[in-house]
Image 1 (tube, rainbow, N blue to C red):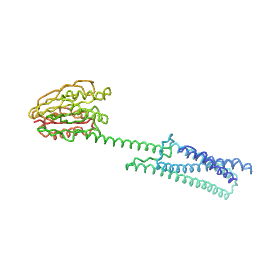
Image 2 (cartoon, rainbow, N blue to C red):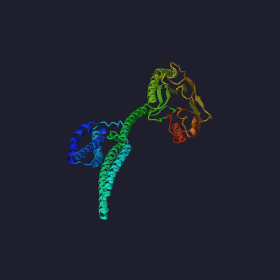
Image 3 (cartoon, rainbow, N blue to C red):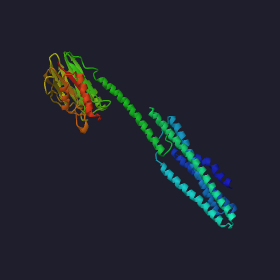
Length: 477
């Protein structure tokens, strides 16, 4: 009768596995497998109990013992089936990911701690029921025995053997479940760590299988999102590297060789790309133009505006002889691109006429150039006024003119120099820069720029740079 009772759900198990377990969502299949095994064993126990009671008058107490025993067996088989189903899902998910299929995040987190708590509560209830029935049956049996010591001794031995048998069965069952669960944990850990090891080696095509809806599935899903973000980040860095190379190529390879003049320049960006730039334009007839510009901000956007402004400056310098007309034309073009966006750029345009020994310049919102002489204390500035480019549409800039700075150095820089921050949020400042220039005015201009850069680095003391730094120094005979 027991065999017949268990044969019925066993015969239907395959059908219900296809109809109930395999058609469900992937993350629900282990729990559905558990429910199927539990339901099959419980059904077998109920059929066996009812059949025996109807056929041979089985006592209802013994029938309930059979039902609880079947329930305990179904709990064990359900856990085993769920763990085996989970293992097959992990292997299948890993194969699918290796085949190039996407791995979606679990829609709902089912915590492992909550599952452990429910399982522990269920195990405690089943053990209490099993040992309660054993205790009640044994007490009733012992109370019906005669008081012969030999009989009682044999009875105690029988009770001990019964309990030992039940404990041995439970120990074997729990050990089997522990081995299965440990195997699943090892498989999950191994899959995740192997994938992350490949990521560490630079393979960002890796995707981790998301086979569970617990913390492992959440970790795998977050890791996949991280890997995707890293791949996008590296692609962006590659693009920025290309932009950096392009922008570096826009800067002059070397200063022009002009008889009697000594020129040096440098530009150091705090990001891959920046908004500062300098340029040298030879106009012929002994005229050379030095341009230093600073676009507000730093990064890709200012770099694009810088490249556009550079092209416009070169085109306007070839069209107009007057520096004021050149900068006015550049302002009109820049204003078309940035007016109303809040973007702008400052520019210092210096024309050096070696034939006439004369300087002409336009200052469009840029800090004045410093003029330092070797035989004089203090300094002078190439001043003048005008708003930054792109701020006032149609503004007409007027060029300033000045004498040849005999035996002097003209220094043009961007605000990233004197606004460099050190300890206590102090700024480098123009006074410190001027002291450096006056102290080293007799040295080659290339060495002067190196000294300024070194002092800036020491002043910053490892603080992150917040702006680009561009310098041009020109020594006049």
